[in-house]
Image (cartoon, one colour):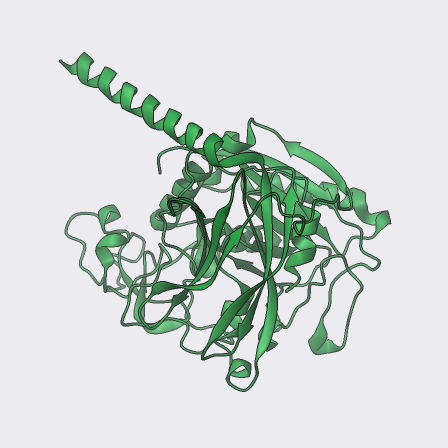
Amino acid sequence: MRRSVFIGWIGLILTLTTYGQSNFATYFTSGSLRIDFALSGNDNHQSAALQQLREEPVWAGPVRNLIDNFNYGGYYVNVYDSVTEELIYSRSFNTLFEEWRTTDQAKTEVQSWTNSVSVPYPKKEIILEITARDKKDMKFYPLLRQLIDPASIFIDRGKLKENKVTQIQYKGNSSEKVDLVFLAEGYTAAEQDKFEADAKRFSDILFQTPPYDTRQDDFNVWAVGLISEESGTDVSGKGIFKNTALNSGYYTFGVDRYLTTPDMKSIRDAVWNVPCDAIFILVNTDMYGGGGMYNFYAIGTADNERTPVVFVHELGHSFAGLADEYFSSEVAYNDFYNLEYEPWEPNITTLVDFDSKWRDLLPEGTPVPTLLNETCKDGIGVFEGGGYLSKGIYRPMDHCMMRDYAPFCPACSHAIHRMIDFLCDREY
C-alpha cells in the first residue's frame, strides 16, 4: 500500500512538472519581453504608462513556477492570454518611486520615474497588466492594462552594447538555478580587474553566510563589467558628482547612507543578454551605504569595512523581500506601514494575521507577543519593534541580519530558502 501511494505521488509530480513545461512552451519562447514604463504621481495618487518594449534573447526564470503566489511587493506585472484571459505569468516587485511617495517631498511635488521589468516573450497576443498595492486596504489595483502583439513593428529588437561578462560560478540550466548578476558601477576601464576580483570576493562572502552556505549549488553567478568614465559615485550632499555607468549616488531622499540609482533603464540595458534573476550593483567606493528593492536590485559598496554584511543585508531586501527590522535609525519615510493590516514582508508582523508569518517556527508555549527578557532574548519569538517603528510592528528575534547584521533569524532563513526553491522551479 505504501509503495502504491509513493508511486502515485511520483506520478502526480511528473504530471505537474510536464504541465508546467508544456504550459510555458504553449505561451512563451526562450527569450524575454522587457517592459520600460513610467510611474508618475505624488503621495495621493499614481499612474503608469508604457515607454518602450524590447525583445531580448534570454529568459532565465522558472518555466514551471510561472505564477507568483508570494503576494509580496508593491506592484505586480501580470500576463494574460488575450483570448481566454487566463493568467499565464505574474511576478511582484518594488520600486524606488514607491518609497519616494512616502516622503515629505511627495506631499508638494509630482514626479515621474522610469521603471523596467521583464517577462517571458509571448508567442501570441497577450494582455499586459501592471497593478499597484493600495496601502489603505493592501489590495492590488490595475494601473495599466494593454494588448500587446509580439509581432509588432514597434517592439525594439536591436542589439545593445555587449559588455564583458565573466562567469564566476555555473551550476546548471538557468531555468533551474538562481542567476545572480554583479554589475560594475564607478569602475573605470583601468579598474575592471578590480571589479572582477571584488565580484568574486562578494560571491564567496554570500556562500559563506547561512543559509546561502547550504545552497551554493543552486546559483549561477555572473559579473558584467560596465565601464564608467570616473571612479566612485555621487555624494550629492557634499557636492560630489561622478560620471558613472549607472548614475548611482548617496543621499537618496536626503539620507546620507542611502545609496541607490533611479536609472533602471541603464541597469536593464546592462543585463539584456545575461541570464538574470537577481542583481547586485557593486559600487567602487569605500563609503558606508547601500539599498535594495524587492525584485529590482540591491546595491552596495566594495571596500567599506562593513561591506560583507551590508551586501547580504541589502540582498535580503531585493532577493527575498525581507523588511528592515530596525526601529531607531534615521529614515525618510512617513507612515510606511499601515498598522491596521498585515505587512507583506515575511519577517515582520502587526499581529493582524500572524498565522501567515512565522507562527509555525515558534517553540510550543511561546507567548505572542514575546517579552524581551533573559529567558527569550536569544530565541525566536515575536518582539516589538521593526519596520522603522518601535510600536505596533514585531520582529522574529532580538538580533538578525535585517536589524543589526547578526546572523539571519529562522524566519528570514525560511523566506530565503523559499525564494531559492521558487526560482529553481521547485515546490516552495
